[in-house]
Length: 337
Image 1 (cartoon, rainbow, N blue to C red):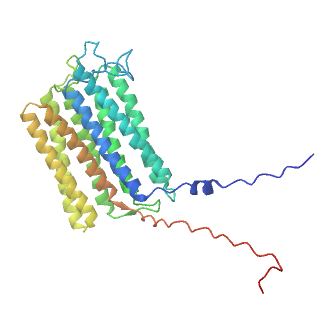
Image 2 (image 1 turned 90 degrees about the vertical axis):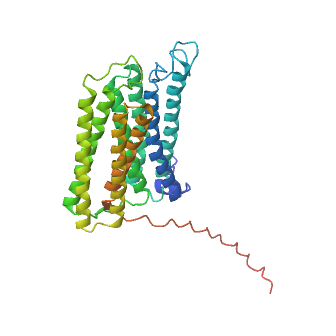
């Protein structure tokens, strides 16, 4: 029997290296766009709610059982149809950005595991949000589904900020730039922030902006939930003040102190906005601004958390060396003597 020599397998790494590397600036730009898009979809979702357009498209994934897009034949107000449908289309744009982040991370040289996993969380999160959004519509905007929808967005904003940070780092060992007590206090502030966000969704669930006039509300009084939300916010702010004194005492790095100041500014602005919102009877515009404020506070808290550790920066990407082609040798005896 003839013997077929085994094929020489091309190493997988060599195949991947033939693909043009993604420039670091492009990876960082896409990560920043992911932060903006994740926050933006939360804000536009609040617009859907305050305009009463939550069931503008009462079916999912289509707008109506026999129509993918808004249809004037139905009794639902056409404005509500387009507001809800527009938010769905923005989710599609967010999905494109999320997939682009993942592809860019896969094209980064050298490949970085942490960067890839954070980038993967973007399309995975968008897919999860699409499922939760479908459940929200099919459940008739039940308050707990709307709360989950918002809280997942906050998690994705947090992860997108970490993705931005990871674009300038390698997978090398992390160095903590804060002492254990200071880092523990930062962790505690993040736990309290999560409680503030959950309480905020409960206030919304009992409030007047349900997304549809027929949607049942959470059966707890708004003043009670608003007081709980305000108390948690005051506690959160108190922890941040204590953290500020501690960062000063331990002479924290300038990058940490700068991010701390951003967070304090965002929390103070959000608190003032929430007080005005409650005093004025929860006007629609302030609701959307309050959601934007929640996104900014979450992003600032994530940036502060990311600044508590450092990893080595990636080495500059050097262009591949040009291939050297040897000139053909002349046959013997044909010299020009």
